[in-house]
Image 1: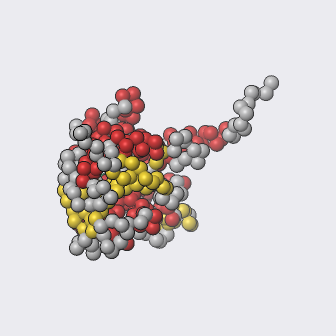
Image 2: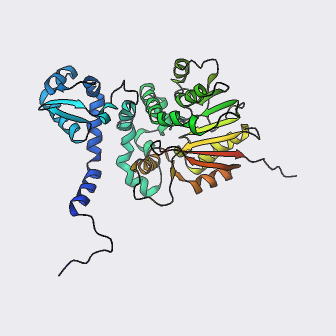
Image 3: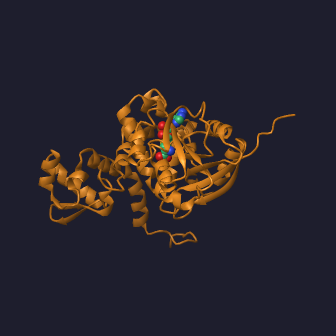
Length: 357
Ligand SMILES: C[S@@+](CC[C@H](N)C(=O)[O-])C[C@H]1O[C@@H](n2cnc3c(N)ncnc32)[C@H](O)[C@@H]1O
């Protein structure tokens, strides 16, 4: 007797197994990447093909384990064994170098660090309770923990800057900044995004607004972009106050860090300082209403990362609309940036505050 089948052709058993095994072993693959960056292996490989023994000597590790790590990297598509026992980085592996123009070295270090992964061991509790687990493990919430550790905080800021690079490259082509005079990048981190916008728009001035530790590298970024005469760095807490003076407020990867109440407070504070003709520009991924077949896992893993570490969430366009409306903003535009960027731009106009007569 034949087995009953579903109307759709079932995937061959091997594919199903491969899919689930890839997910199960993903944590180990992440540690291979972590070790490769931590030990400077990608930097030592550079653009050359290197014998495992030479590489082991350069990185001051044992030959046999180095060979085994390189084989794993090759199996993950990050290296190629070009001749027996001789390895070179692939194009993807090249992004793990510190000096690559599209480097993800800092992102790899931060997102495999125990500070980012520790709470993930308690994802089950977060799913039960809906509460972030970071403070249970580290004693304080995520950003307070970073504030007490300047090196880790600098790594986080570098990882954000690397994750923002594609947005910074494409936003000036997809949004017209002509009608604005002053841009505030609220939670603007190391200033990479604002520098890219000001570089492409010579008429604009701007300021990065962030905590002292969040903005610790911003002065250097702005000065390296030769924008010190048009761009300032202002320290503060966006839950309490946002400085006035901007006619465009940018929030890039800020609202997704927070639950609706906290995100609403940030939006209220933005509303309080925007002139009537001003605009809010939110740059975030937007969750589709239904998970598409070709969904990229990144946005959904980011959603859970927000749940487990900070208490925030990724949002659908309906959820952004509701959140903005509750804080006195009307969304005027939601457009995807190019697909490889993975972010949307959401423009909102402040609605006049109606005072009871
Ligand atoms: C996810 S990062 C995004 C950084 C940057 N906008 C980007 O997309 O690359 C969140 C930023 O919010 C900042 N931040 C967190 N809490 C803050 C607060 N209470 N006031 C101001 N900035 C804060 C962090 O320091 C960090 O730079």
